Image (cartoon, rainbow, N blue to C red):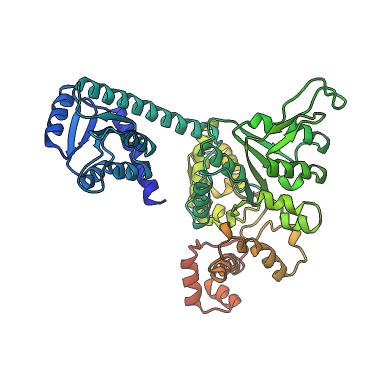
Length: 507
C-alpha cells in the first residue's frame, strides 16, 4: 500500500471516529498569516464550542492538515511560503478529508474558480462583514463531513454483505493479486481473471466492483457454461416479443440489467463461437441489439470475464476468436492455485471453522495440530472451494469441540501429489512445465518478467521434498538419499519451505 493510500485510510478512520465521538464542537484549523484575523476567528468559533488551532504559513498549515485531526480548516490564499492554493492542491492529492474553506481578501473570480477546482469546500472573502456567516459556513461543513462519514460506513457495510465472502490470504502470490485489484478499481478497463476452478475468481470480480465507483450499481454474474447455447444470446442481450418461439414479451438481458454496474462473464471459454462476434462488438463499439430488434443500445457496464481454461490453446484450436481474446485480456489477473499459496491454508482453515460455527451452528470450534498437518499437506486440486468443503464438513460432523485428523475427509486419498489431473497423464514433464509457466511471461502492462528461474525452482522444490519425505516415511536420511542431497542441505530446504515434519503413513 502506498503512503498516500495509507494516509487516506488513516484519514477516513480518524474522521469517522471524530464524527462518532465529536466532543464539544468541531476541530477547526485557522491558517492565516494575519494575527488579528486569527484572533477574531478564534474568539468567535470558540464561543460556539469549537476547538481551534492556528497555522501562520503554508508549511505549518500543510503539516497540521496531515495530522488528519481537523474537521474543517479556514485557509488563506496569500500566506508566506507556496500559498494557500498549493496547500489546497497537496491536501486534495493526499486525500486529506478535512473540509477546507478558502478565505481571502483577493476576491477575484480567478481565485474563486481556482480554489474550487483544487478541491475547496467553500469560499469566503475578507474582511468579514458578519462573523455569523463564517460560523454558519463551519456548521454546514461539519454537517457535510458527517454525511460523508455515514456514506463511507454504509459503503463498507454494503461491501461486507454483498461481496459474498472474504478474500483470505497473506502469501506473496495473493499480495500480487491485491495490488492488481487496487490498480483496476480506479479505471473501467476490461479484466480477464484466469485460474483453476475454486481459486476465487468471482470473489475477486466482486471485490473489484464493490471497491470501485460503480459499487452502488448492480453486479450481474452470468455463467456461460451453465446456460444452454440456444438461450445464451437472449440471456446476455435480451429479446423482443415474438422474436422466437416462446418469446411472449420483451425481456431485458444481463447487459441491460447491469446498467452502469459490472457484468461478470464466468467460464468465458465456453461462450459459443457464433456468439463471440456479438460480444466482440460489445467490447469494441460499446453497443448491442436485443434478439429480434433493430434498436441499438449502449453498453454502460464494466466487463469482467473469467476462465479456468487456457484461452490461448482455444484460440490455436479455432474455438475462440483471437481478437476477442485480446479485447478481454486488457488487464489479466492470474489467480494462484492453493498449492502455490500453502502459507494461506492455516488462515483459511481458521476462517472456515469460524464460518461453520457462526452460520451452521457447528460444535467444533478448534482444530488439532494433526488435522492441520493433514490439511496443509494435501494437494487440493479443487483449491479453496475444496478446502472449504472439507473443513466445513469436518466441523459439522466432528463428535467433539476439536476437529481431529480422522474427522478430515479428503476427496482424493493421500497428501502431496494426490489427485493430479488426468489431463497430464502420459505428458512429458517438460511439456507440463512449459504449459504451467507460459502465463508467467505475460506480465500486466507488458512488463518484463523477473526472477523466473528461482520462482520455478521454489514451486517445484517443495512438493518434491515433501513427496520424498512421504515416501521415506519421514526418515530424513532416506529422503536425502532419494533426492541426492546431503542431510544438512535437506534440513535447510525443510526450513526454507516451512515443511511440517511428521510420520507419513506407509513410510
